[in-house]
Image (tube, rainbow, N blue to C red; front, side, top):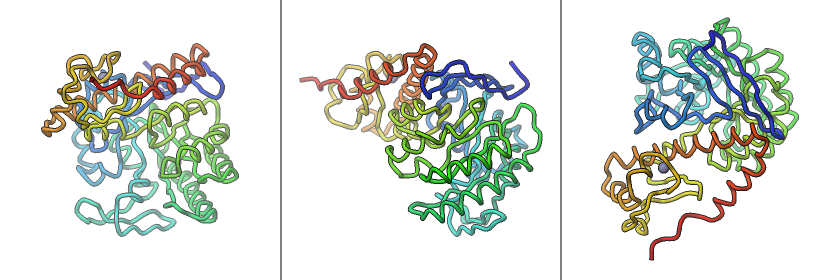
Amino acid sequence: MTDRFQFTLNATDGAARTGVIDTPRGQIRTPAFMPVGTAATVKAMMPESVRETGADILLGNTYHLMLRPGAERVDRLGGLHRFMNWDRPILTDSGGFQVMSLASLRKLTEEGVTFASHIDGSKHVLTPERSMEIQRLLGSDIVMAFDECPALPASEEEVANSMRLSMRWAQRSRDAFGDRPGHALFGIMQGGVTRDLREESAKALTGIGFDGYAVGGLAVGEGQEAMFGVLDYAPGFLPQDKPRYLMGVGKPDDIVGAVQRGIDMMDCVLPSRSGRTGQAWTRRGQVNIKNARHQDDPRPLDENCTCPACRSYSRGYLHHVFRAGEMISGMLLTWHNLHYYQELMAGLRAAIAEGRLDGFVADFHAARAEGDIEPLA
Ligand SMILES: [Zn+2]
């Protein structure tokens, strides 16, 4: 245990890295996948079950929590860790991205963003200073700088102007965050798919100095090829000795490709959200449990998986409870999906540490190419 936030790089394999982030609330093994606990819960999961899947850290959403139940209320109730019964590290986003994607009547100025809540239409203001205050009230261990991400499609000039505004906000975030030992502030690189803008953004951020750096403005609908195109060079603009976080990614093959390109941390709602819509992720790709082919199938989702859904239930049962709208459907499939994601991360970490990432990635793609097990005759 440490009273400081500290990143230690243990091994590299090509551009890929594995290491450990030490925080006063525990270690985060990297590359790390962070389940998303939007409204102070990873939907359909008890926090101790989330931990059992292997998660070291959760993500909380500033935008959602500031609107409901409110950051000041969470603070009065003991902070987000106590409130949601998760005593390990929590990363909170800045709220900027979700204001742009969820709120209405948005007005963007140099000062910040004014918007109406998607819940009740009430008016709110987010600025770099207010975002830092909210994330402090929540008790977040890793705080994200407040940034702006242009809606796509955007011209290169719009992307450049937006990036430069985000860099001014990054400085204001740094100033407002102050000196908080044991807590980290991450800067967010912007610049769309333009190499020069990414480099300019990275220089501005490293000039300010952060505890870690996110690659922002990706996974917003540009497609995997364009995302990997940016990740082929963007992580190289960032310091070797600080964690690199790719926000909002992704599908298992996005994660593997990002790790190969030097990303240390990721988050995505996909494993939990798809668990509630009857979609499972396995070593052999995606399984749609809604399909009639599963209704008489006594076999588990994945015979090699050790999660509760695979250990104790058949595909036939999982199909039935989904069809019947039973809550256990979302619970079991979410658990399985989060378990699969964490097992993938553990496999990536071990492969990087042992210098066999290429073989691991080849096996990963080969298993997926096989597809799901054949239906029973
Ligand atoms: Zn499973």
